Image 1 (tube, rainbow, N blue to C red):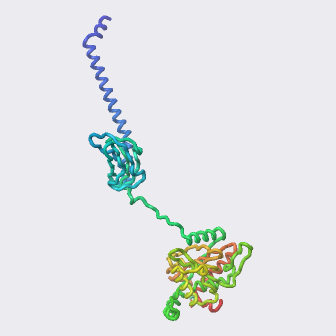
Image 2 (spheres, rainbow, N blue to C red; image 1 turned 135 degrees about the horizontal axis):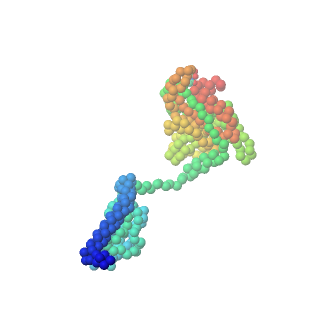
Image 3 (cartoon, rainbow, N blue to C red; image 1 turned 45 degrees about the vertical axis):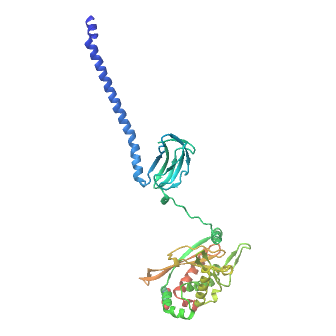
Length: 380
Ligand SMILES: *[C@@H]1O[C@H](CO)[C@@H](O)[C@H](O)[C@H]1NC(C)=O
């Protein structure tokens, strides 16, 4: 027992124990430091990754800059901020964003780059010292990425068009039927006679006259397409005349002047009338009477190169014919493929009044007349 005691408390044993303890403490300390360092790096990694990710995926010009309070003159340590700009404002490079009012003077703080103010880090009137963060600016997000959409008031004509088109949709049970027209014969006829026609009538021979005349013919054949519902009396009003509204686009919008009594006109009369009305429309001289009382409308999207589309009824009418562009297309003729100048035509009609059979027959009549205009001469 006395041996063990003497051993334990011997001088060399105590020294050894202290040295061992200190070694242990050092090891623990280094382990702690290493652990903290590793954890720190791990925690930081995603953050730095995100930063890089944003910088590369977004336009790298769109960098976020933090602008600090400039150092003041020696005797001045602080000042009050007066903002000249607000968050969202676009600023140019060197444009003043705020003034810092110190005891002696007012220090303007310019933007280091062109961009958009993202955040103000000090409230208006707030106190700042040199070096304090003032605001954040998104560099590069300048006027090039800020679009100001032009806004103009709807003019009376646009308002009226909008009102009437919506009225058509709300009132009619509209649907559309289609067909296609082989324009070979009428193209050939036009090519053959256009010079003589121009010489005699002093206007160009177009395709419109053929469709207007064909419509008058088909409307006489299918009177319900030329009729209208009288909403007040719940009667169907059949007309014994054909007044065709022709859609003409003008700088102010679409207008629909009327060609009256088309049933009594020949191709030359129709072309002359269309020409005169078009002239009036373009020079803004159409009177209200010129656009009143059509019984049917023709809209020619072909002038803009349209291939196919569904026109909308021009109220209070019951149907509208849509013409489209003439394109060379392969078609089957007597079992052979031939390339012909073709046009799709569409008839939108009010199904409350016009039956499918009438609409389809109407459009087939148009096709027959335009493909072979002699049909009209022979009244077939
Ligand atoms: C073109 O007119 C001729 C008569 O001249 C007729 O036989 C032919 O069917 C017409 N073409 C088309 C595509 O209807």
